[in-house]
Length: 207
Image 1 (cartoon, rainbow, N blue to C red):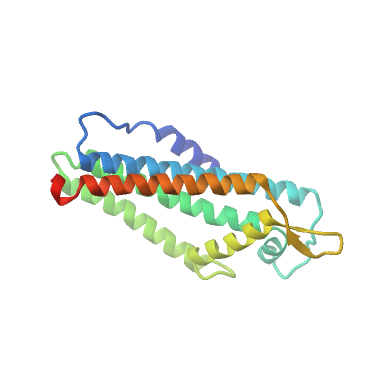
Image 2: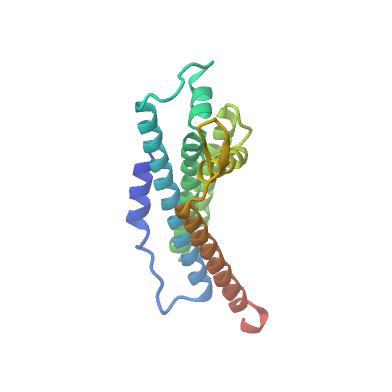
């Protein structure tokens, strides 16, 4: 499913470009569409990558398969991979639905705002029901937010610690991990700067 979502997001990511004739509101909606589609694509490929790593790790037979149930065994042996697959996939799916809602709202509102509202409400209903079903079906976790909290903890341990010969964990420097965090911080900084510019354009003195 994550591979299908990654292909779908990549196929529609560049079909809603900005033009010189777009107003401020249209520019904001198109940028939000690109942001959500890009976010969805990143979540999809991260989920796919985590699943592939988990499969390879299980095939190496370096894990203890004995436990009360398969989910508990996977969370004990491969916590970062399992939580990454669960957290990133649903988050990417929600972002994908949000991007589609923006596009339907913008394109369908011309001449028929009621139809546009109906389409957006339909997608919103699907997302909320899906999220509710997901939260109700979770085992060992309360909701999607709880999954993300535990995932961040497991990912931090995986990226910045290693186990020595005595079985103790110690801090380990990972250049790729630190570089990835630096790029994430740069992305958030630039998004914040762009949001500040949009708010300035929508300010009372510009209307």
